[in-house]
Structure formats: structure tokens, C-alpha cells
Amino acid sequence: MILDLIKKEWTDVKRDKKLVLGSVLLPLILLPLIGIILFAAVVSQPPIIDIINENYNNTKYVKELCSYIQSNHGIVYINSTKPADVEVIFPSCFYENISNVNRTAIVYISYVISSRSSALQLVENGLYDILYNTSIQRIEYLENVSHTKVSPSTIRDPIEVALLYKLPTGKQASYQESQFSQLARIVAIILFPAATPVIFFVSDSIMGEKERKTLESLLASPISSRDFIFSKLVISMVLGLISSIGDLIGLIAFSLFAPYIIGESISFSATFTVLVIIVYLTMILLTASMSIIVLLLLGGSSRNVQIINFVITSFGMIASFSSLFLNFGDLSYPLSLILGIPYVQLVASVMFYVFGLIQESIFSILATLLVSVFLLLLASRFLDSERLLLK
Image (tube, rainbow, N blue to C red):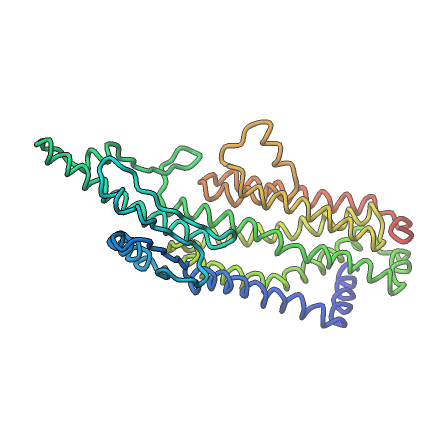
């Protein structure tokens, strides 16, 4: 009986070829396009800086800043009126002040709001080089005047900072692992939007029966409520997996462009890739089970479908943004209660793996699987045909 229902569902899907093609082609086009746009924004559009020099004597320092910016792939204009991300002004009194050991020179930076932040950072780093070199020269001058042998660099930098990294478990980590954790956070954000089409597939599979006037006869047939729900679940997940082809290609495209975006050569390991696939499949199952039980509780009206989409999307957004702001490796009560929100445990499982907490990662996935199965059993047990038909 259950196989017959699944075949019927698949036949209905094949009649609507636009649904299948759209679920594959849209993410197949859009997600790689997003990766290309990010790549173009970072690589193809270098930061533009305009340097205004109000005194010819400042030329030495203007050239130093210009050289630094250009060596870091920036574009520099001198005394230009062309649009730029950042404008740097060397006032006429700059040379007089910087050449005097008792004075402080001022440089004015004008940053265009919403422009590339890397342009401002590039200017600040270039000015820091000038600051450092000038302070060394002043220390050398004082050394010669006082006839004292000192190390200008030691006086200039009396403290050396060695930056170390460690996992929440206390184990020492590398810089590459730190960057990998940041990349994993982005992957965790991408996962939920990739699973949202299942909400539509579940709602459409039941609402489609209602619109074709076949839902009443189907519910009146001798099939069990469990078979009815399982068939809807299977076909919705199949469509979700089909749509994930585009998501997978988009994720691969993103991982290829990621080294250019974050400036580090980082790649996904085979184990991490398998984990992401498992988490994604579990997320599809959870989305389908939540969609079914909420639809059965509220009824099959179009208004209720919008409520379902809003509720599930809200949970998913909470989980996605929690990956940015929470340290899942060191959650304490009462903040740890957030793990009880749907989808948060799946996001946490990705971060647990990055932090070396393998057991916690596996437990989070298994717990979500159990919750998903429980919701499906609950839906099949309390299926109310009248509510589904009339509301």
C-alpha cells in the first residue's frame, strides 16, 4: 500500500515538470552566481584611495603611502576629483610637524559610508608604516643627541605579542583551524536556506490533493494515516534532495571562491564534507516533519501554509544566526537552553566537529533525528481528517 502511494505521489510530481525543473535550475543558477558576485566584489574591484597633498614637502610621505597601497593591490589617485572609497588629506603643515621631534602631525581621512571597509584598513596600515618609521627616526635622533647607545626598535616596541589559538576543549589550535572555524560558521548559515524548499513541497503535496478534490477520497480509503504521512514525507524529501543538487553545486562554488574571499587557502576535508551532507539531510527531515505536524494541527488553508512557513523559517533563522554569535564549545546554563530550539542542534553539530567535540556533534545529530521521527509518529497518531479538510 505504501509503495502504491509513493508511486502515485511521484506520478503527480512528474505531471508538473516545471516544479522539478524549477527546484533544480533556480539554485543551480542562483547559488553559483552569488559565489561569482562575492568573488568579483573582492578580487575584481580593488579599493580606491584618493590622496590630497597640500604641500610639496609632503611628497616623500605621500609616495610611501602610495607605494604601500599599490603593493597591496589598491588603486591610488593623487589630487584627483574621481570617486574613491577613501580620501586621505596631507595638510600643508604636515611636513613641518612630522619633521619636528616635539610635534604631532595630523592626517585627515574621509571615508565614504557604505564603501569597501578594506580601503580604510589599507590606508590605516599604510599610515602606521609611516608612523613606525618616523618614530624610529626620532629615537635615533635622540640617541645621537644624548650620545647613548640604545636599540630604537626595542624602545619603540617594548612588548611583543605572540598570538596563540586554542579550541574550547583547551587543545592548542593553528591559525588555519581558526580560519576554518569561521568558514564553518558561514556553511552553517547556508544550510537552513538550502532546506527551506521542503516546506513548500510538503504543503503543496497535501494542498494539491485538496485543490484536486482528491484529499477527501484519499483519506476515506483504507490506507492508514501513517502510510499517508509517510508517502507525503518521502516524496517531499525526494524533491528536496533534487533541489539540493543546485545547493550542493553552489556550496562547492562558494568553497572554491572562499580562499579569495577570506584571503586564506582553506579546503573542506572529506570528513567535514560528509558531516555537512548528513546535517543537511537531517535538516531536510526535520523541516519535513515540522511542516507536516504543524499543517495537520492548523489545517490545510493557504493562510495556515503562510504561518507554517513563518514559524519554521523563524526557527531556522535563529539557528543560522546563533552560529555567528554563540560559542557552542562553551555554552553554560541558561544559555545552553537554546539547544532546545529546532535546528540549533544541527548548527551546533557542525561547530562541535570544528572544535574537536566529536561525541557532542554525533549526539546533536542523533537527537535531532529522534525528534524528527517522534514528530512524524505524533502526526500519524493524531491525524484529524476533518481539520485538514475544512480548515
